[in-house]
Length: 489
Image (cartoon, rainbow, N blue to C red; front, side):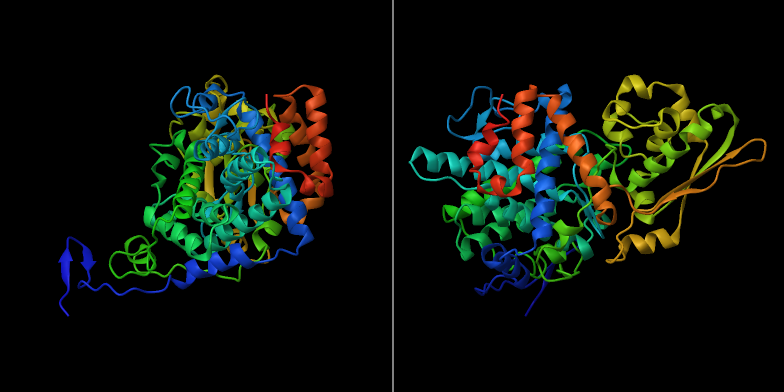
């Protein structure tokens, strides 16, 4: 056998055997088609994820930079009887509806998070799931048939969370320069193809195409290019997932060794020869352990830093000019992605800067989405504080971050003054919204949801939505189109 080389890519000799799908693709397909979810905790958590993600989307509709991207891709290209976009009057094909919902829900960096070797926001999958389920339900209703119920949506959410999160446990896309939304596309493709009634072959075909697509670079998440694409990247991935699922249902072929093909497969090309693995059997672990951003719209590695800064506000608010040094103790992952010095050019840049988040907390004793806007960022005190900050890794924080029994996201802050005095070292291992603080978080998550709804809907409509989502059994029986209609303007 003769092998050739083309540039730096090893090109295997031409061989064309027909083979079964890669085992990982087959395992994901079996899970979405056959697995029964029995965890009551997972369903209850999924209901809160649904609540929180849609609430974040409603709040995002206050921001013109978000709303300018919404609606049909081509003006006027609506689809009567298509998927509805919550908080709007749009009726769209499910591909474009998924983009809309995904962009809204992720715009403010305020929905759920799962942290491992790869980072991500599993509720990003809701965009593809809800758009597809709503479209299917409306099509069925038009034919006089019952629509899908919200139990199907919650089940698909649990499974999408699990696929994305378990892939993230050991497979780091960020270390090869790719964005985590590739795992959104993979997870959404699998569950949406199943929602559409896909066969095992069709789910596998769609999944293989999701991997062949590869993913976007992380360019837009890092200096000097941090920009608003990070807020619509998940919507883009969700919309692509729906497209691939619809194509598979029409019989489009798949690529059985999309992962393992020598030279040309995902593992050789993207992971540099490393195998893509599932660390644990697929069940409901990720939904049960997902993290909620309850109080602060900031990148999750900075959530406990925000809590620490706000706790220090009263001690330092009248001594800002006396500060000599601010030390932030954090985990390795935070240093890699949100430790930034120098100018910050836009809100997307600022909400991914641990120093900016800490400065806002120290100055104002709170943190909201508006604090990332240009008018607040023009406050010269912010950069003066940032210049005094030193970010250091606490190796125990880094170990606990990866410990599957802890999954901590620890930060600590200590402030030293010119007169030689200092504050205590304020430390927080688990943010509000972590599984270990779930009971404390849920009432506040409900308050956040109601407050977000009130930015978009009159009180009567808010009350109808809240009452339905709080009643888990009634919610699960509700048909999807009836649920979505509550959010229509």
